[in-house]
Structure formats: C-alpha cells, structure tokens
Image (spheres, rainbow, N blue to C red):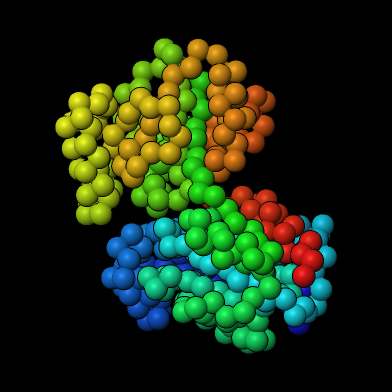
Length: 340
C-alpha cells in the first residue's frame, strides 16, 4: 500500500466522521447509535455531543490538503517492518488518534493500546479497515500486555512506566495544559468563544484553557457573564461532582474564590487547575506573561490570545480544542527519524 492509498483512506474516514458528527439520533445509523450509548455507559464523560465534536475536529484534520502538506517534509516509505506502540489515554474521545494516523501514514505497523473504556477508538479503527481493508495488516489492537514493539508513543504517566518505555526509542509526552492571555479589549463575542476553550469536553483536554492572564484593571466577573450560555455543563453529574468537591475544599480552607454556580474562578499562580475551576492571574505588563510562558513552555499546550505579535504561538479564541494543522508534525518527525 503506497502513501497515496493511505492518504485516500484517511480522507474517506474524515468524510465519514464529518457525516457522523452532523447526524441526529433520529437519522444516525444503528452502529453509530450503539457506539454513542455504549461509550456513554462505559465512560460518562463521553457524551454524544463530545464524541460528535471529536469526530468533527478529526474530519477537519483528515483532508487531502492537510495530510499531503503534513507529510511533504517527511519520507514515508510504502511499507516498513517497524512496529510502533501507541498507548492511548481516554480523557476525551480520540485524544491520541493523530498518533495512529502518523504511524500508518509513514508505513509502519500500529500496535494500539486503548483503555478499556475507549470504545470510540475501536469503532473508528474498524471503520478505517472497512474503508481500506489492507490496513487490517497494519493495525493491531492490544488491550492486554503490549506485544513486542520497536518504538513507543505515550503519555509519561509515572516513573515506573517511563523506565519501561525508555528501553526502546520513545516519544513520551508530559501532561500539559493551555492558557489564555487577555489584553482587556476583548468584546463579549470573543469572551464567549473563550467559553468554548474552557468548557469543550468538560475541560478535560490538555487543550482546554485552565489558566487566564488578565490586566490588573480587568473586571474578572466579565468571564462569568460571557460563559453563561455554557451552564448546560451543570446537567452533567460528574462535572458537577468535581465542581461541588472543589467548592467545598475552597470554602473549608477559606480560600478566596469566585463562583457562578457551575464554574469557579480562583486567583492562583499555578497553570493547571482542577475540573470546573479556572485559575486567573493579573499582570501589569505583558512582559511578565512572556516570562512565565518562556519558563513553562514545556508545560503549555496552547496559548489563546489576540497578542500574536508578542505571543507568536498564540491561536484565536474559540479554537483551543480544535486540531491544528501542525498537529502531526511532532509525531511524524519522531517516526521518520527512527534508528532501530
């Protein structure tokens, strides 16, 4: 199977995912409805809306233009004998699927280790093999002990796992979080888009904004006004369990915080906040934020801001949880420079 066949298969998969993301429960095919029900039963964070959002995001990545552009700077042989293990996480649907895309695009064999709750990845890989049956020889689902592999891609979860994984060539990622930097000129529309950056996937993704930097004279309650349309998260019991737990901790500890009934804002220098909490920090000069970003760049996934001149890596409001065009670059670079 050559590169163009592989790209064509992923493009067809992207088209399927887009169609699936737009279907209502009344017109969805039976196996899709079964997926929604099974996934939600096994992992309550996997709501139908979240699965559809993951499908939509990946459909926007899996286009001929994006995939062709992604591989143009990396050698992708027709076939290799390399077996690449992909150990998946299950915070949000298809969180690590782009790694599988890269493994297969580069002609390698994917040894996929999903979690027991991750019906969504199983479902999408099954669809991919239906679209291109030759992929059946390149995809191995391993839900027990990992079979022999030549290299591994995973999240660096703990020291024990790191010692195991580093015995082979590896791409181990430390957990990250995302931040937003406001300059005070943001209107209600942009702040509302910030709500998407905070609440999509219930804030569980490393791409979700968990820390906001604001000017000293910024009225922080403007955030509450802007995110009010996202109050539907209060209908999700696991989200609200987190909200109630964190609220009780802050109350018992007498820690100052603001609360609108479904989101807590807390003045805190840390970057990573708990679910249902967003930390904020005030600055008098943007250079203060630049210094924090520079010192913690390896801990930051995305930066959301209008200040692209001062924060060159920043992306627009509302796009934090979308898949960026350069999403595949790190993994493709790792795979195409493997020496085994």
